[in-house]
Image (cartoon, rainbow, N blue to C red; front, top):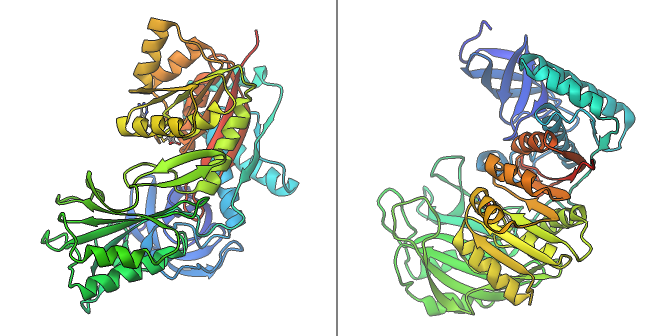
Length: 501
Ligand code: SAH
């Protein structure tokens, strides 16, 4: 490729990457272009080139894509939180579905997978591109070819993905927000977002993914700070008091939580601070979090309670959860219910089953499953999460759940070897890196009837699916859920069943 920095060229954007960047090809060379949308024809300017691929910036859109829409948020490009806000929401959903589909086919070797039922022609088109890509990868990975064809023979039936579950209103879905405080050029106290990876605050009071109450809460805090001459924290000098505010809302209960993160242990005028916040309907918990470290970690360990019991309550489905400022809780409760509902549906429980929930976090899925299972065991590496999980089980009077602290790849083999534990169904919801091989190996030994895989990263999902497919499991159902509209991320649930011999 005869090009150098700042050279300009015309490019057709044909795909979009994990972080929302547009992807186009020119003479077999791949270009990544931020802010370009699938379907756009653009003028691009070279920023950086590697051997196989390069980065370019969007100079201008020559022919806008039919999927390009006006961003709703004025800060969308600078904030970086919404990477694909300029893409029509229905197309966002299809993009996400295609990403999972391509990975399961290419990396997972699921040659019998079909995209959800939709317009025949577009589907054929997409099938073809995926087929081509699968072929290319296959050819490039020597030695894998035989493996592939064996599977092709064995598989007669096809598996059609179920349509992705999107949101009817893909805005204001986040129940949690964290805003940093600082001063702008004119010396005014501001809140907003850190721009990209920098530490400049982009002024933004009303993120369209967050709840409406955020704006009023921020304005109360800002005015209070001006009145009481309270300094926002400055990272460079490690001076100033107020670092961040954490706001959470229970979508089912309407309860609000405000936790102010301070570089100190006392807030001047904290009585007034509390009184003013209490004017907002639903205010249930007000606290301070002490963070005196030179760090970009937002929350410190210590909490000082100013009002309420130190937590709010919320429901996902019929299950109640207690949420404190430090607990983990899924940020999109509406889609979480649908995601875990799908997992529960795939688990197909009748009330007699023993179920293991690996990577269980605060037990959200475990408690969901416990409503329909005989016994549920959860495994999670973070001890505080397990404390919350046990607390939530008590809160819901569920006695058929038990939790283990430890790595799934250690706890499961240990339990299996020592106690010959058994499972009808195993659910896994691992972090981005997927399951450890030792964990998968033990799952195969335990031979549950069904494995339900909940994933936030379809490449590692596909790798693990392939492992299980080669060891007696068959993929039966696949469904994506859009937990993070306007970002490139997608969650997916896969049901694998033990092949009957
Ligand atoms: N289902 C959970 C969220 C899962 S996120 C919920 O709804 O709350 C993945 C979880 O896996 C995180 O809580 C993380 O702490 C945990 N984790 C990461 N590595 C692990 C390991 N090796 N073994 C067990 N848990 C692990």
